[in-house]
Length: 308
Image (cartoon, rainbow, N blue to C red):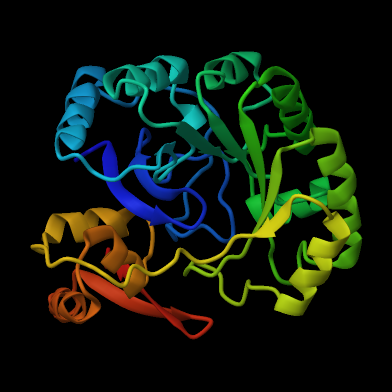
């Protein structure tokens, strides 16, 4: 599949059918915590990336397998709002699936300043914009944006989205050790959040491997930040383990397709593929011996990554 992956176990969305609209690492940011670990020049120009007819055919093929889906999620390996005509794409997903599944868009919020982008996003049910910084200085340190992206316009874009969008908005903040995890930052976040008025605030932690190391803040500090920010705040928890897994045939392309988009623990892959851990571990060891995957530890947890 070129445009779809999963459904994958998501820490926030249950079983999420991923939709990948952009070429790998096509993004307006170059975040220090990015899982793709590829340095690229940020971009702002929106383009058409997909073959729309092929996109719809792939989606029908996915649905024909009757997978368990809690959300259809536009995210993938780049910034989804860089794709033009998002409204048309979201409508197609809903019409083809007979409106069975809610559609979520995970965005870095960089293009929400544009009314056309906000209008296209109105077709979604849930929008999860990121705001990793309470100030322009911290924003540049964490997100390393395209030079033309303005932090204050991003804030205004989020505020305007809340006024215009009728669905749910969950604001995500990635906490980075020594950069945006001070109590002073927490108080500043609280002020910004009051203006945006999201339905929920989710504090995320950079636990997956990235180009930078030692990014996870102290958990006691995270608890203090949660208290300061206040109501409707949650720290994103790990996806619950599925203990009763059927035996299924392991397909190499499914494993590699998943890992191209995000590093994964053995539990992630086990839940995604529906395969018990012992069998999967044997298979991953074979892929490692073939140098198709590699292993990296973060905070004592082993992650499997594509070996580019």
